[in-house]
Each structure stands twice: as C-alpha cells, then as structure tokens.
Image (cartoon, rainbow, N blue to C red):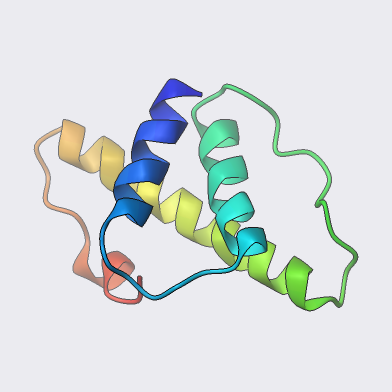
Amino acid sequence: MVIAKVIFDRAFERPRTPRSAAYKKGVFDALNAISGETRLGDPPYRVGTPEMDAWLSGVDEGKALFVDYIDSAEGHEPNPAMTASR
C-alpha cells in the first residue's frame, strides 16, 4: 500500500478537477492492485450506477498514474496524452 498511497497522494494533493469519492476509490483500488498489494476484485458498485461509472474511470486513471510512475522511475517523461485530462 505504500507505493499506491504515494502515487495517490501525489495525484490528489495538487490543484485539479474535483473528483468524487467513488472515483478516488477506483484510483486507489487500481494502484493497490497494480502494485501487487491487493486484488482488484469485484467492483464495489452496481453496474449502471453513476458510482460504478466513476469508479471505473478512477481505475483507468489509477492505471495511467502507475505507468507514469514507472516511466518516471526509469527516467522517462510522463506521456502528456495521459496526464492532460487529469
């Protein structure tokens, strides 16, 4: 959870578009799963609800944030196409 928390905190400590709790949960859940600290498991919301849509969008951002984290650790610049919408 340490790596996931560091990446998550960096993403949300700076000024950005406000996001819902469900979105942030998706980001954090994805980061935890990708870093190997937990399984992503079943979605926590019902299909077709705004919360599910937000959570899935957060999962997408979590994946992109992890890729950026790995790229920066390897000395690569973040992909501007992935960070422009955040």
